[in-house]
Image (cartoon, rainbow, N blue to C red; front, side):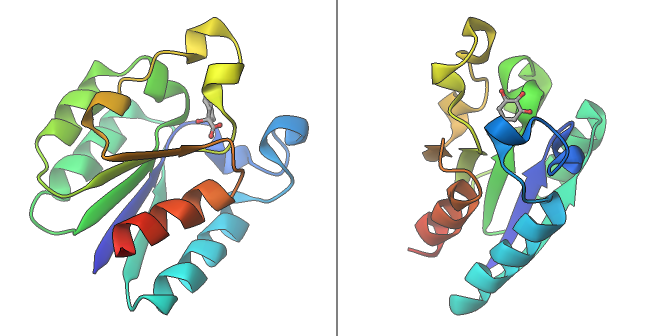
Amino acid sequence: MRLLILNGPNLNMLGQREPEIYGHDTLADIKILCEQEAEKYGATIDFRQSNHEGVLVDWIQEALGTVDGIIINAAAYTHTSVAIHDALKLLSCPIVEVHLSDPHTREEFRHKSFIEPVAQHIFKGLGKDSYIAAIKALAA
Ligand code: DQA
């Protein structure tokens, strides 16, 4: 099983970024956790981050026919990006939306998700465990 894990803008700053909301783990820490979890299921992961919407769209397009599942924390683009929504619609593999925080309990502008309509599962508000839950869901 090949899993692509995509992370959007500002997630490269985890550890320094609003730790009271996002915790103290860095994205590199979360990557290691994901690799350890994936290994339990014999899955391989490709873990990426970009601050650029078009780069995320390119990576989603490249995933067509080459991965068995996508886990995406589109970060702020969750709430704005029709382009990422449209790119995800290209894919036939399962898509899992993840968030460290629970956007629905935060500012109103975070309540709308353009990923939600194309996702089979959503894990939010669990901190780094949202990623682990997503890997488990795809492995199952
Ligand atoms: C986030 C929630 C988004 O609203 C925010 O813009 C992020 C991170 C999360 O993981 O909790 O950058 O996706």
